[in-house]
Length: 186
Picture 1 (cartoon, rainbow, N blue to C red):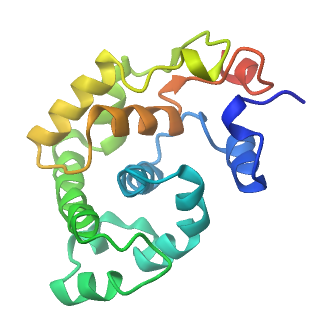
Picture 2 (cartoon, rainbow, N blue to C red):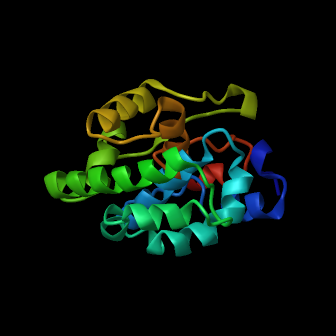
């Protein structure tokens, strides 16, 4: 079975690719999780984040944005001692700030999904990449998303992080055309 070049090893990447990556998601809790994890990944490998994902789910209380928005300074200090997550003070602080901004968007738009999917006119963009080398690290859509999220108070949401988020939650189909998953969303 042919997969995207990045998803041939380790097993954790294969399972993530085969079952989740690129599947269109409109679930606000999942979207919040992926936004936080993509921000945490900055400067690290996605495999590192996947290995820590379960610890993140526990530490971030199921990625409930209402709970994360209420994390105290004491709770943040505890997170910085948790070896199961990326212990970066700026990223931890950003996750709390992002939860607050996320809730503001839910309140103003009814859901984060309604807001975020506007950047692709509410339907996945389907690309036709033949190899990993062709896939951009950012697009005009991810640049626009980054600008708007930053304007609304989000942190760790540069255009490259936003594009990775868009790929992860199925806003774009960036499976290589030879990948068995491409046809599912093509």
